[in-house]
Image (cartoon, rainbow, N blue to C red; front, side, top):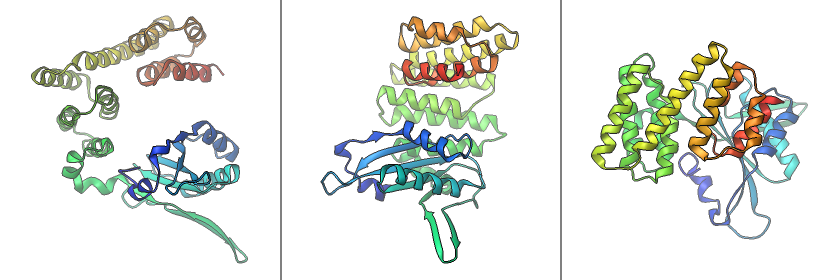
Length: 305
């Protein structure tokens, strides 16, 4: 909010906390009957001014590709959320696509003098392309994330160029003085975003390891674990292609154990009931990035439903 929508962020009383309502948003999406959607965040926050009537809803939608019905969808979510909570709803959009001219910011319809609609603020990530220096020096982690996104777009078809930028951006994480967990989370993001061919990926990890050793920083083992998980994932994908499902489940459990320690027996048993190769591959990827065992268990249940 502070990076993309600073005026709104300044009006929020962050000292009163905030509440994520993602499950409620998922229900609204199902009720809207607009098909499967990957919506982002719905959050209840408090505005400055005091009193119990100052909490409002913030719906942030990150859209990665051009969609003809995007503005209408924002309108539908807005009025359904307002109807459910009877609270003001701020609908905000972050457009991460590669079409500079696509900027949906409103939806309206009119019939016989009756008019309804929604206008919403839009942030276009491509607009930051000529502010690369500012992004690299801005301490806000979302400035770094935008820089990584833009460099990913700019290095399509240029793996050597992407290698250089991926290493530069990874080093910036350490130079900015982020906390260990922040570095690991952002590292996982850039590792997923800026995919490299196998040979260049090895050069990247070697370069990052040398940098960490020079800085005498203790994150190298964590970075290596992420690399090992990626190796497990690549190996298991080959195994899946050969129909070796058990190895896939073992790999998932190994990743979970490396990240969270002991895996509950019930979760291991549930995983044993997953037999589709594509689903096992997807769960392996989720095991690498899931924030908790509880969240991963929900993914398994969804896969089985």
